Image (cartoon, rainbow, N blue to C red; front, side, top):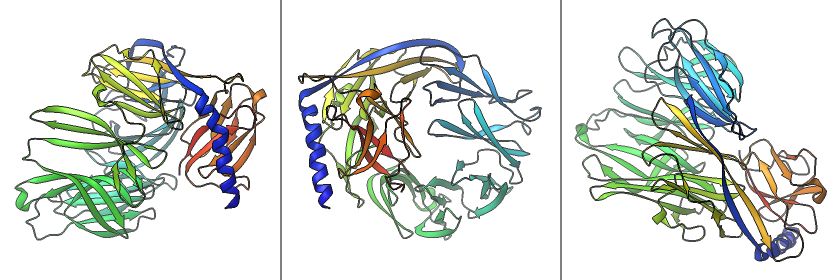
Length: 520
């Protein structure tokens, strides 16, 4: 305890002169804007900052493929490349492989396809594909619910009497099994993640006047299923604050389906019991709607949120920040970084080089706002606002790394994409006659297994030091010419817990900090 009390003030004192003397500015540069001929279904940025646009058929062609077009930050569009060919020909709807699920995991994407005979899982990273397949003995098809959970593909199917059944395919062990059958009379079901290792199974017949009871169930990673205290309720956890508290949506139904209400608020899961702190409960007869869409966790247990309201008087949205106390209580936060909502609520919220980046759109222009979370200062962005080549009603999608930001517009679906590649050059000016601190980059960030740390010059950084939030140094890593790799472990080789850490150069004259987020 004594060492942490000493190290933390020293760390803050080392950084304080830079924060006081330095002024950061950012310059938005648009590297290119391309009117492409590319129709795509999913977009992912590869580890080398190349944009990968994936495409597959949605109607039965003679032969099915999964293809990719790659666009580099230099603006070069690579030719279409077939990365997977489905077996056989799609001669009819039964033999056609439909996409039932797409899930982005870091810089990879998982696809689940199925026809009446086979289920196929494709794990795609760039142009590399790992495939798994199994006979479709469960009859997966139609509008089933599907997801990937603990190295398994879970999905629901309906039998001839419209009863839903939950199946799981363990693709590593090549086994498929029936796990749970919903109530025979249930006509509404939902399956959703409850943290990293649990699922929530809910069901209702939309008629609570019925004497039947339809339990909400929790399934753990070993596929053990246990009932909760809830019945006849559809529950959808939307955003986790921790493993026991979520922002959630749930549906309440009146007797004999006379009316229904959609509720929102904080859901607490405690030993199998579920309770709600209701923020809003709107029936289908109400002339308005509202929704809180939580987006991003920030250091200090802060969480960004976009609030949307729609009513007879008009629609509006605003950007909000909430503080979480770790005990299920979440309250509006009024400290830095608050924003001027007159610029419209952001369409994209992310961390860019450890700074909060907000991108809003209004009157045909994008406004870029950048906040330094460490110094609690807004960074002026020259080149913003930027006029987007489109209108307010078109489909926007942003993908970013710590170096590049891709903006993608798709006017119609399906249809060709317009792609813009941008970057923010963040510089530091200081009154200190010593040269400005060097740039320190981290990728990927957040990370799960390892992160790569790079300086402008290895000469000014013989080693990199890693600190936790208490100011304790947990690791010292020698710099390497091609980047320093940190595996999330301390000096003894023990895996550190998930959370926020800081990297800084081991140098007397340069005190730049880099915020790192280690995930589970």
